[in-house]
Length: 181
View 1 (cartoon, helix red, strand yellow):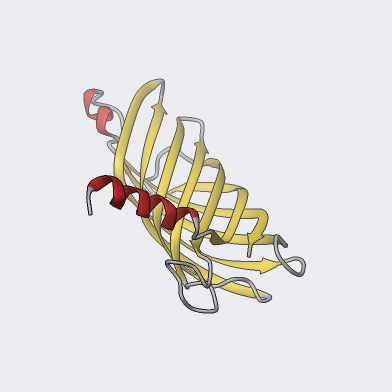
View 2 (cartoon, rainbow, N blue to C red):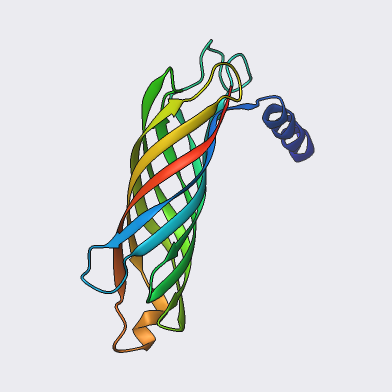
């Protein structure tokens, strides 16, 4: 089998899979644990997805409890503005009516720290939370409560002697979204 056949098989397998999980938009307070002026707010768009049952990647009758987390987050404090892309692995269950979830991953962030540009990549983050369904059936609305911890290394802050080189954040997010059956 040549490369074209392998690539075609991969595309067909992905296209025929479909996903279960949920997507939410959230917001909440963010707290710096480093003692600097980095307390403010956070907004996010998150999704946790896993292959649907009876598909190429899931031969079972229920969604897999392991999935992929992908999220975009903005952190806004007096001294720091940050945009993050988060990717990680999730352990989760669909809300019937309430379920928990755990996410471990890394993020890529771009920051404005006291007017200076910085960035970081492969920075760890973790989430633990609860999700509840607010309706019945497919695409039901959901509510999430998430506690998140993140650690940033600000690479370009090393060019400015008075800037903090690292940041550690605790965030509590309240989210609203919908389930993907």
